[in-house]
Length: 387
Image 1: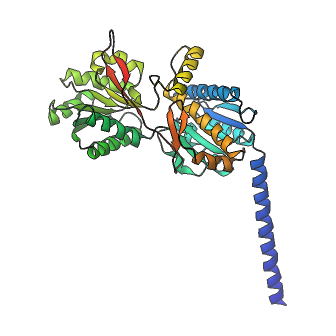
Image 2: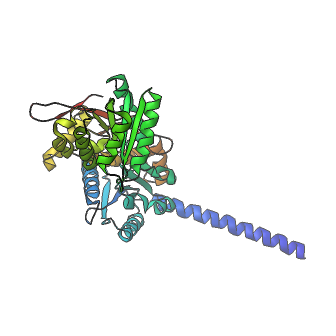
Image 3: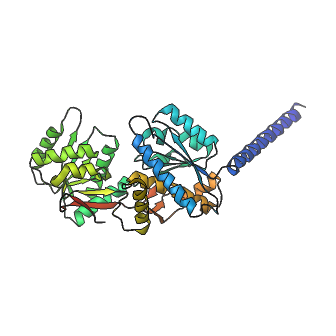
């Protein structure tokens, strides 16, 4: 009797597990089937520190949604948007992400600041909500199957930039100056530049670090002592403010080599403050208004008409993020996140406002950088797109 009883208990337990699994699967299907044709956006539009990031993300997504829906949307249905200002704070971020998920959005587009791009990741994964960071330099796409990153990969950008400098400009000898006062991604950029220089047969003749106990003047003096002035180019990893300070100090100490840097230097203040010293600088960027691609030209003109200024790379990245998600919904023929997720990972050769975009196997966008040369203009330095 005990053996029979035990068998019955096992069978009953298996039935309970099986029924539970079926109910869970049915519940998940119901949740997916009920997702709205809606994309959430989260970032700091107000608050201290990174409010400018959120502002640009909101502008880019709003513009993309308007253009996409005006063109017909998804089989005549509009893709709605819902914007959350998290004020750059943890509590507002988590509460805002929870509201978007409860509202059954298909996807969430996040500002590249740390709070917006990192805090909601687990919530998005657990709920099966697509989460895409626009412009983040950190590889958040490895955080789960529903997490994506739309940004120019720095490993590609640094490689293409150094390749151009060595093959086209014949810059072989490099000094590298790193600002350790900026975010930690500047250190990662150093290793990527060094790898690219080695790959393309260049040489690093000196390195200098600006940090809390070593001033810009002292760092450059160290660089000069190690390499003299026999330098073809100086690579700088840091923001535009730090770049201006370093550039002026280089010239004061007699080092006339041109600058090489990222889109941090693609800023009006760098050209204005750098003046003649900035001429010859080479920089890469994920987006440029100098592109003659019709998709980009149309986008730039529309933004200028609306805002009276040029769109930033982050506005473009946010615009493309919405368009990539909308394209995936269209290809999936469904608003179920699992199907949209699969369609998103298969996107290849998508023509965005920031160039041709493909999605890699590890859920980040792949594209090549625009390379820009700073040249002498009639009254001030000018930018020329060279690649």
